[in-house]
Amino acid sequence: MNSQLSALLLFAAAATLHSQPTDTVSIPGSEATFQLALIPQGTLVWEEKEGTSAELQLDAFWIGVHEVTHDEFILFQHRENDSDASLREDGGFSADAVSRPTPPYLDYTYGMGSTGGYPAVSMTQQAALRYCRWLYQKTGQFYRLPTEAEWTYACRAGQSWQPDEDKLNEYAWHYDNSYEKYHKTGEKAPNPWGLYDLLGNVAEWTLDYYQKDYLEALGDQRHNPWVEPTRRHSRTVKGGSYDSEPRECNCLIRQKSQARWQARDPQIPKSIWWNTDSPFVGFRIVRPVQQPGAEAIEAFFESAIKD
Image (cartoon, rainbow, N blue to C red; front, side, top):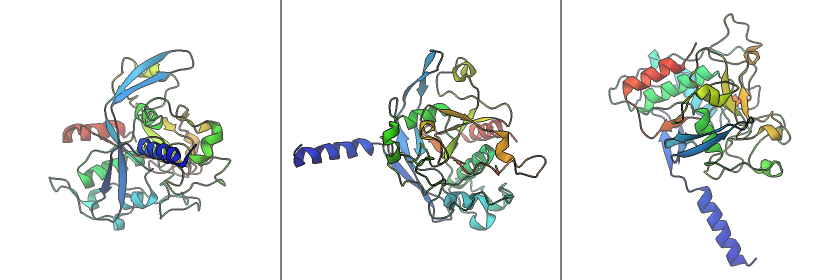
């Protein structure tokens, strides 16, 4: 292959890789920023082992290019890191009024890293949702966790992307290459839509209540489907982590959150904020392109957050 053709192929690959529009968002009152990628509307063909399948229609949405970092999460976690700065048009944000995580019982990072670009970890799904609510209050834009369908669609870059195990090291930190710890976000290659660490590093919360038979749980839902929670446990976690076998770092594999992730929590009842035993779980955020109204946003959080 001549050098000119090689250069053209590399240019084409780069253009495909970074073809999704991005948006850089600043968190008011801080130096923290995060980046979102625009995921186009489309169809996800969901297939189950029993041979059943369904076409799921998804509206366009923005999703975090990286997992939410510790640097971002501590602005919500600690009052002293926050301020009353907000972009909300009604000017109704007060940092003193925010419900924030209680101090964790253990070092939730297990010494693997915090500031400087490491993923935020060990929070419950409810804590991740409360972070989204705080971010909405700070920015005036509605943020939430991705649904399982949205996460899978973004991971597969539409429908088909999934690296073979012999190529997985290029994209994911997993048990065989992670040295049993998570790493800074964005150190591996992104998927074709420019999203980093969807596979490996830390597994990621989704919005959905976990049901073994996903399509059955959806019922007739085919447009922006969501298995809405009815109680606190369990939720669907996706992507695998630094502690996962390579075969588990797969866009299609579903993981069920476990009560034992709070095994060392001495509180009764257990914390609504922290999982003492899941430093391998974090999250990334979604911002719908079509923003709902304020009443619908508050109704969503009231419905999704189950203490």
